[in-house]
Length: 445
Image (cartoon, rainbow, N blue to C red; front, top):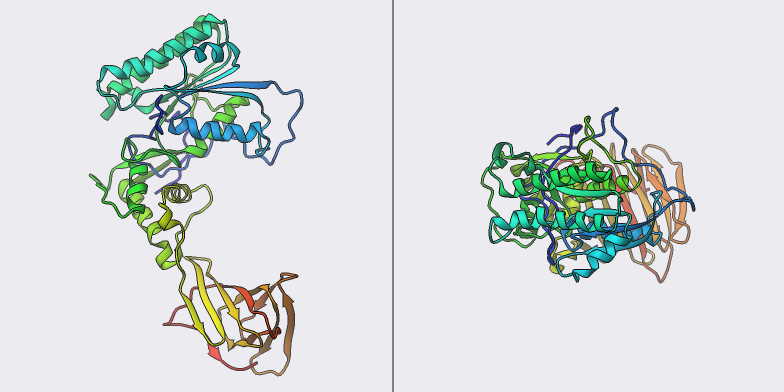
């Protein structure tokens, strides 16, 4: 898996004009993180913005609003509209949602009043091949004609697909042909009306709310693996390009701020961050995620990585019975000790419960070190350097939460000072416990 810079517009499937979730893409992801080249417009990654009262109030039409992309876009547009998302310099007055079950007369009303259009409507799994052209080209034509009817020259975004290249395995794609026809329709509309159009060719899409067992391998893998259902991988070495839904939504926000990313010739728009991974790599990651409740091992998920985004996607498909899982409590007459989470490079987390008056610990480590954080109750923590008599003493409580280092080469303990209440301590160690090399030696403080 690799991170790369993508300077050209990606392509693939968009959301459908259907009641159901429009599936992401027909192919599984690719693990490739592209970061914006210097000569392109940067994404917006700035801290929260104080919105100007002079900003134009947007009335946004979203077609295909019940599809995969549409649902995610509308949900996030509403966070801006209601003020819970303050990271963008955007003011939204209305969000018009249009889909296959919307009364047809609403299209006239929305096209008359809107001042920005996201056209996400389309067909990608029809019963007849001819429906591709009618659903993708036909509706696009209807939309643009309705805008012309009201002389509405607002910006219009088109969700197209990488299949519109008609290259390689897409050479004979009827879906690709219909998307290409839609693109040409938009480009001609721009020339005819002097209107700004934004044509995005999306690669394979993935993320929450994508319909499984439809046309997205990632959605299907996530759904089936989370439910112990079989999956089919035709070629584990098949590498695919993938666009995460949240990255797509952020680019749509860029478009609303007139900061969209465009190819060098300016013809196409694109989302600057994509990922590449093989089918085998994707399945391997998902199986690691599946095992996490049993092993407590958290896979490496660096910020903005494909693994992080795939993990979030996988979790969104968990059935209710998998959302909550038991942890092994090691219980004795002193209380309990429970491992919570293990990491590859950053140690492990545990929780320790001590009964009233109980002293725990009384050991030291050569290299291992820990944090003790009392979250409930009152305790005294004592540490003594091996070979000396000097004792470091710290009194801590859940009423004033502090973190105390357990120093290498110091024997240490923790004493519950209460006669009636349990002491609850969150513990972090810089390495996972290994029975082959415990680095733990008994000695009273």
